[in-house]
Length: 207
Image 1 (spheres, helix red, strand yellow):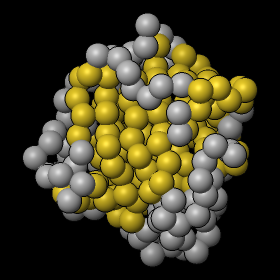
Image 2 (cartoon, one colour):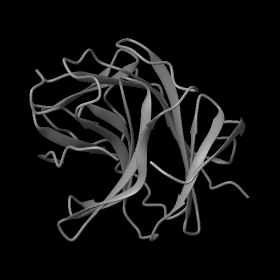
Image 3 (tube, helix red, strand yellow):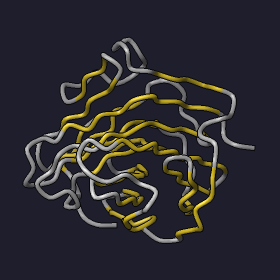
């Protein structure tokens, strides 16, 4: 699934960082991306194999690589994200996780940019809504080639975001049945920055 990017800036409701264990519930699915045989979308802008999923969007576009398994309203998922090089590392080049995804008018995104910023947004009925504005986080390792673990949990209407096993913030959403997936966005002036994802894991929501 792909759509022209809404681009832009977004993070609020920051909470004091605290240690957290990543994706420790009952496992639903995990993928080391060693092959392309997993239950993921088959699209021309993503490749899976050799231990990673690579999402390479055209300039000014965004895409969600959907996990075609369960459609959980509640979940605990995490993935390692490697930043690409970017002419403008905080200007619309975003990668992360999507959830409650029906289409590009109904989805939530938790994303990070190569400057080490993190934020969340919702797209609904052709409106772009900030759920948690983008803000640089000390827990994120910034710069092209840096790898960070992003974890998102959904329990009821509360979404909690962790980076590198530290709890960063939470916000409220509107739970709905929809896909989860890997998200990438390429800035308008960029040259298809490839986002790399490794070590995906989906478990039951935390108790």
